[in-house]
Image (cartoon, rainbow, N blue to C red; front, side, top):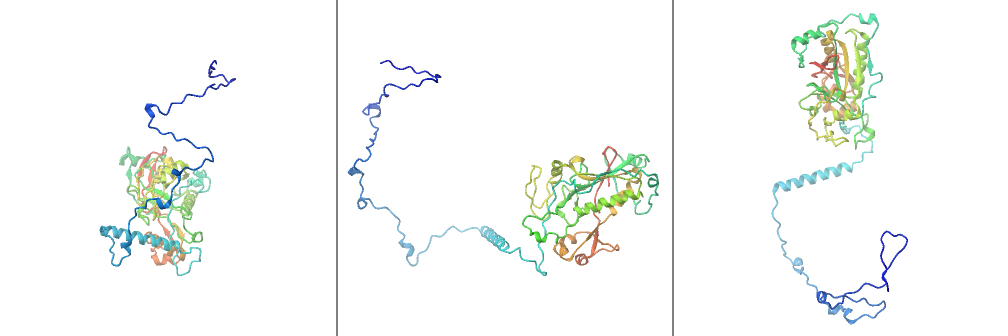
Amino acid sequence: MQQPMLQFGNRGSYFVYSKPPPRVAPDSSWHAHIHYPVLKDWGAAVDEEELFLISELEEFEDISVDSIWKKGYQPPRLPARDNAEDTHIERLAAAVENVKRRASTDLSKPLLETEEPPRKRRRLDDDSLYTALPQPHLLPSPSTLHSLQAPVVDSAGLNAPRKTRPISPHSAGSLKNYLEDPYARAAWIVPVRGVLPWDCSSACMLSTKVAQGEPEQYKGQQLLLPCPPGGGYDDMNVEGRAVITWTADALSAFWNFLLSLRLACTLGPLSLSFHAASSSHSGRSVSSFPSAGHAQDTHSSGAHSRSTGAATDAQPHTLLSVDHIKVYHDAQYTIQIRNVLAAWRYTYSCSRGAAASDSAQLNGLDIDNHDSNTTHTLERAMAGHTGRIRLFKGAKLVLVDERSKGILIS
């Protein structure tokens, strides 16, 4: 019989072998030691070698535990542990019990008058600040002649000398010539959030959102105050830079103050601008600041390497990567305007319940009476009085020219 020929790639026909493949004899010398079990037919009887009796099986070998129940049995002694390890275990157990006790507390019940409301966790605002201030964000100087010819306020406070440091390549001589030029324009940079590319104060923005785990009913009962550099938030310093801590209300109040100063024209023609950094830049410029009072978690970008309560390294970025306000003015009024910024105070109203929960923050601030220059005591501030905070006390601001190049730091 002719063997069929296999053809590959021919999709029209299928072939099979006419004979089954050969089988190797079981008594072959090279695998005679291999035993091939023979499968029985379905329903075949069971052989005797497949039957087992329980009585004929060997007993299991076990370990006698009778000695454990005998009186006077002494269990084996474990190796002694270090005292430091025992202390660590006790601390962990106490921490676990504390967490369980706080978790079992019913936060939904109304807060009694004698109870102190929980302290609000300080969180930084990472959202865009584009809507933080009303439009327009660029206000040119007034163009009316009578406003430009308004008299300049001349007082000892405004003309008080300030400690300035020129920025290279400027020197003390070139700086003096620039500030005396009647046609030169300059601008003070007020940081709102981020690290400026000069050795000056940085800034951050506190968030008004309710922190995770905080009851919604306590929102609005907490006092959220801005802080000048070195006041209230000791862990807000980055690489030795003092940080201005803003709130949304303080930023709005400062912007309104600048608007009134621009309309008054007592310090020459002023122009104002507010630059809100893009979301990508804003995250990089703020991520290095820690949240006061609690550990930070990682957030979105890699630059958000947040630490626990201590400041991390923060590299300065370009001016466009920082949320800031520019106060354009004639260079002749540079020192006067800087003194005005230093003298500005943020006015707040402190309720009794809110101040009671944030006494530590009030204790670190320079609080002034709204009606006089006497300093508030902590008890008076907590009693519902209105106070004022000098937000730029101790701050170092940078002055730039028409091309946003640094001139001096004061």
